Amino acid sequence: MTVHPFAPVFREDARVLILGSFPSVRSRREGFYYGHPRNRFWPLMAALFSRPVPVTAAEKTALLTSCGVALWDSAMRCDVTGSADSSLRNAVPNDVASLLRRAPIRRIFANGRTAGALYDRLILPATGVPITVLPSTSPANAAVSFDGLLAAWRAVADACAADPQKETPIRD
Image (cartoon, rainbow, N blue to C red):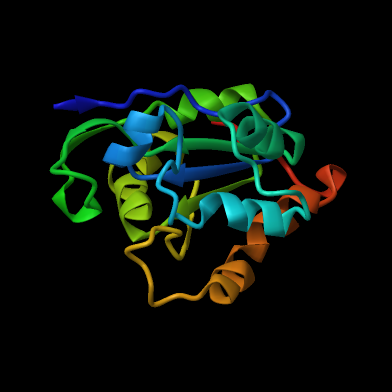
């Protein structure tokens, strides 16, 4: 069983949570989320928030936290072959409910169907909070163009920009 090697990217003023499935081999080797150079996550976040594309883990963390975004994965540990989400087995969930108690998170988004399915099966019963599944930023999802991702993921930026006085944070 492979154990998730990273803590969540998180600050206590986060308004949005993005969940992936489990770090790829390259991300585990690089020591941070979305470490594969062809993964479009970081260029996408930069475009959504009109920022330069971050390079270092510190720059990536600063980009997300300054925009009110928390980042984690649905699985804390699992059996996985290589980096393929389709090979994930025996997943044990991360404690997303504890994160929701610590921040005024208003929306949860999944980076791809596998992250969403893991959440629905393993985490939703503990949180009762639905997740919005967005197209994966993985290079394996070549069917969706960068512009297509940008259009779909605009919901993340919109949720971050929403007036906090008009929305109720998620709490269990």
